[in-house]
Image (cartoon, rainbow, N blue to C red; front, side):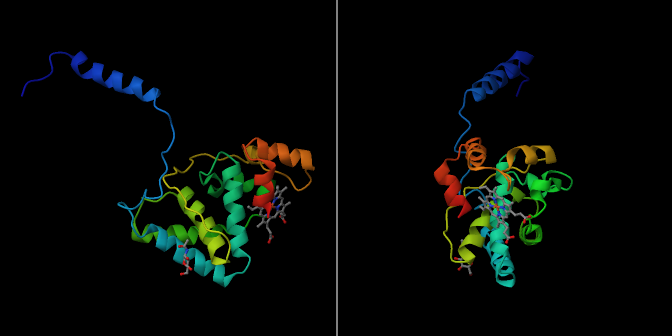
Length: 189
Ligand code: HEM
Ligand SMILES: *[C@@H]1O[C@H](CO)[C@@H](O)[C@H](O)[C@H]1NC(C)=O
C-alpha cells in the first residue's frame, strides 16, 4: 500500500466526477419507495395520525390539502410554510389552519425513525391521506423532498393567489407555477 504519487492522482478523478455531474439531468430523484429501507413504517404512521385528526375534526382534511397547496405554491413543496416567522406570517396565510395535525404526524414519525423523514414529505403524504380519509381521490406520492431552511413572507405575498384577484390574475398566478386553467379548476374544486 503506497501513497498516490502526487496530489493530481486524487484530484483529477474528483474534478472529472464533479464536472460530469453538472451535465446530469436533475430529474427522477423522488421515488415512492424512498423510505422503504430507512423508515418502513413512515407511511402507515403518517396515515394513522392524519386519519385520526380528520375523524376528530370534519374541516381538517380541507385544511391539510390547503396547507399543502400554500406550501407548494411558494418555493415548491419544501415545508417552508411551517417555519416560524416565514411564509406562515404572510397575510395570505392568515386563515391557514391544520399546522397542529402536521406537527402531530411529524412527532409520530420521529418516534419511530428519528431524523429520517422530511417535513415536506410528511405534508405531501398528509394531503393525500386527508383526501382518502374523506372519500376523495388517492394518488401515489413520490418521496425524497428536502426541507427548506428559509421562508419569507414577501415571497408568499408575491406567489399566492388572492381572494380579490380577477380571473385573468388567477390564471396568470397558476400559469407562473406551470399550472393550466384546467389544473386551477380541478385543484379549487
Ligand atoms: C384559485 C385560487 C384560490 C384563491 C384566490 C383562494 C383564496 C382563498 C381565500 C380568500 C380563502 C379564505 C381565507 C380566510 O378565510 O382566511 C380561502 C380558503 C380556503 N381555501 Fe382557497 N383559494 C384558492 C385556491 C385554493 C385551492 C387550490 C385549495 C385546495 C387545494 C384551496 C383550499 C382552501 C381551503 C380548504 C380554505 C378554507 C376553507 C374553510 O375555512 O373551511 N384554495 N381560499
Ligand atoms: C389510511 O388508513 C385508512 C383507515 O385505516 C384507510 O382507509 C386508507 O386507505 C389509508 N390511506 C392510505 C392512503 O393508505
